[in-house]
Length: 327
Image (cartoon, rainbow, N blue to C red; front, side, top):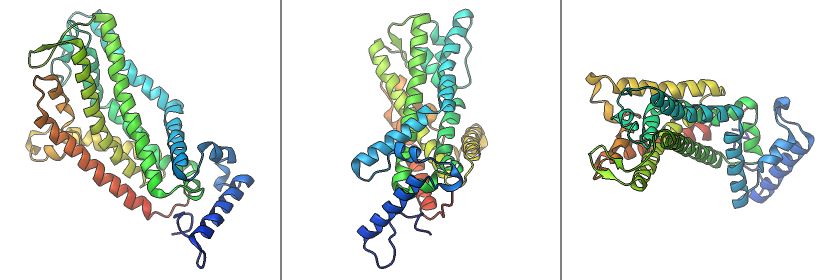
């Protein structure tokens, strides 16, 4: 492993402080001269992303990563597409007479005509099968592979940013993105539903009627539960992203893993495997819409998501920590 691969390394015979000073001098010289591999990174780019040590540097690094995730046109277009789905659902049901059920949707579509609150739940249920996993896979798959593909990964580790810190910031940005898009779909669905169908007390799946305010709290709980499950997929995507320098390949691989999990979960003969599948417990969010809430039914999904996150984040760290970075 070269000195670039581990910023903490110092030359033989040098003290850690001397080594750090030399590393900083080399980085500053590279930034000032513009001598970046392949000419793909400008000095201004490195300065804007604010590679500094300490708490301030970590905060700037994280803010920079969030700007990178939410500032890209393709990501903005993807978020717009996600937000369009609940609007399409609401408008389609408003101009037609007979709502139809969609897949394993537990009556959300049929309840929309009586209360627009259910547009948010119907949209989350509809997008959970494909659109939300694709969005998460795109961000996670681009996290490390995208930096390698654009030639910036080597400089993130030279300027310096430690590998563990880099992975932590990348995953934190994925978590923020997952929470944002989940809340976005729910919020747009809620606004569109209330505008076209009106609101009022919410009748839960168990038949109990609660106030709209309590219904909103339960919707937030649904978003939180789905965020946890999708963050597990983000951990898988981060690991896959450390295996390649092609972000599109990492995105496709992560998406295929999610789709494969859905397919295997639909095969009755594999019921012994279902509890261990990544996506098996995602639909358990409906338990938050019963009274009382069956927390025992939610616990396996949370534990499964935590297990996937720990395993694949550890695998990403092990893989990336020993990887010879050349791009």
